[in-house]
Image (cartoon, rainbow, N blue to C red):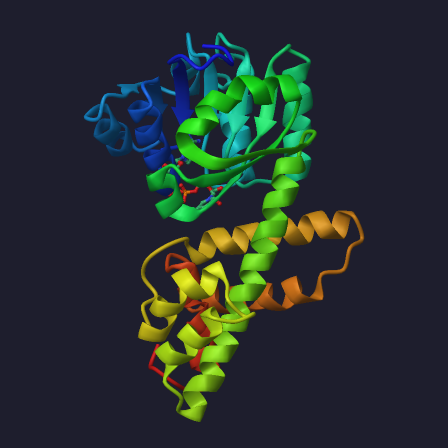
Length: 300
Ligand code: NAD
C-alpha cells in the first residue's frame, strides 16, 4: 500500500489496553493485521476478529507494509527492535517501522539512526486520547521522523486517529507527547486540590465541577476524570504506573537539557506516594487518594 490509500498489511506488536483497540480499527479499515504479544490470550482474542497471530516481531513484520509497536516502556521497545528475532534484523517488506508507545526521545533518536543505517524509515508516533480515543479511532497522533515515512504511514494513522500531526524530526513526537503528559499530570493535581478544598468547605462537588467546566478552569481532565475523583472511583483508566513512567521520562529529558520543571517534580513525588500505597494499577485519577490521605478523608 502507498500514500494512495488502498488496504495494506500491518505487523502490530503490543496488544494491551491501547493496541487492542487500534488493531480493531485497522481491521475495520480493511487492513490485514498480523498481531504479536507476549500474552497469547491477547492474540487469540484479535484472531477472533480477523487478525492473524504471529510468533514474535519478525513473523508479524514478515511481508508487511508497516510494523507498528505499542508497548509499555523504552526497554520493551528496545527488546522488540534489537532482539535476534526483532524488527531491526527483520524489518517489514515496506521498510517502515512506527513506534506509537510513549518512550524516551533519546532512545528514539538512536533507534531511528540504527534503522536509517539499514535503509528503514522509523517514526515515533505517540498518541493522546486514552482507551476511549483508541476505541473510537479519534486519537491525536504526534509524529517525529522523516516526511517521506510520515506520508507513507499516514493512511494507517488515519484508521486510528483524527488529529495526525508531523511535529518534526526523530524524537519530536515523543517530546510533544511528554509536554502533553506534563500538562495532564499537573492538571490532575490541580483538580485534586480543588476537590480537596471544596470537600473540606462542604460545597457540592459535582456542582463545583460543573461551574469550573463552564469557565476558564475547564479541562479534559476535569471533564473526563472529575466524576471518578468525586465518586472516589480509583479503578478505571490510564494506570498510575504509566503516568509515573511518563513523568519520569519528562524529568530525564528536562534534566538532560537543563530545563527546570518544578511543577512536574512536585506532582511526580505525589505519584511516588501513590505507588508506595499500592495504587500503581489504579487509574490516573487515583491521585485524589494522596489528598484523601493528606486530609484524613475516605479510608484507603
Ligand atoms: P498495556 O500494558 O495495556 O499493553 C502493553 C502490551 O504490550 C501488553 O499486552 C504486553 O503483554 C505487551 N508487551 C510487553 N512487552 C512485550 C514484548 N517484548 N513483546 C510483545 N508484547 C509485549 O499498555 P497500554 O495502556 O496499551 O499502553 C501502551 C503505550 O501507550 C504505553 O507507552 C503508554 O504510556 C501509551 N499510552 C497509553 C494510554 C492509555 O490510556 N492506556 C494513552 C496514551 C498512551
